[in-house]
Figure (tube, rainbow, N blue to C red):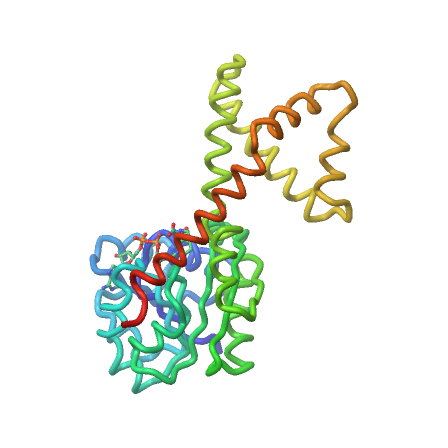
Length: 274
Ligand SMILES: NC(=O)C1=CN([C@@H]2O[C@H](COP(=O)(O)OP(=O)(O)OC[C@H]3O[C@@H](n4cnc5c(N)ncnc54)[C@H](O)[C@@H]3O)[C@@H](O)[C@H]2O)C=CC1
Ligand SMILES: O=C(O)[C@@H]1CCC=N1
């Protein structure tokens, strides 16, 4: 029998994971989502067939797994409101929040609980997610296995054994869909300047990103080698890549990802256990 999984907070990220789970065959009857407004829940119930509730305590009463998926800024208040019920039933806690330590979450929920931090990303919606997982010392092997299964139903999952590495995962994959969406915007704009219509430029750019990622995933060649294979000496790609290098693309990405991980650490200091 599938474990009962309750998502506290049914926004962009939880919605993507739930949709991916249902598409991959996870029984909708074993999934419950909560939100503050019925209008958030209604479309999820209609589209996915999952259970929904505006009552967090009722929704966690029969949960084997509670996925904390509200914004970090309200997590403390939400955890404290769940504390007594969680201490009664002691489910596995999975938090998808950026920048909140397992220690803070465990403390707000009353202590001595199995807590997994998960950093997913929105392509979970289409079964192409990438997530990092970290378990505190109370998590047993069966619970690790369960979290792996849940997250592998919507993409790939990688365990890290140091909690601070979740901030690195946030920079490499959690926030990273936005970097690629930004590139799509920029490539579409440049394609239009070169004379293509926006729709054609957008479709070509996106299909190329999909093709490049799929090819790199299936190849035993390094990205550097695959890049060289596109670059004919004296040709067009060589010019384009030289421009990207001279313009500082590597430093720009490094700076963006450092900023991302730094913000996660800042959030931990601002919002963490007190
Ligand atoms: N959006 C993303 O790409 C990613 C988000 N995350 C994490 O996921 C969490 C949620 O982010 P989003 O989905 O983007 O936010 P969101 O704003 O789309 O969703 C938050 C949800 O929480 C609900 N909510 C608010 N107060 C509540 C309460 N007291 N009880 C139950 N539900 C309540 C809201 O109705 C909303 O459905 C954050 O902690 C974020 O750090 C992690 C990885 C990626
Ligand atoms: O921007 C954020 O804070 C969240 C966490 C990772 C992606 N979105």
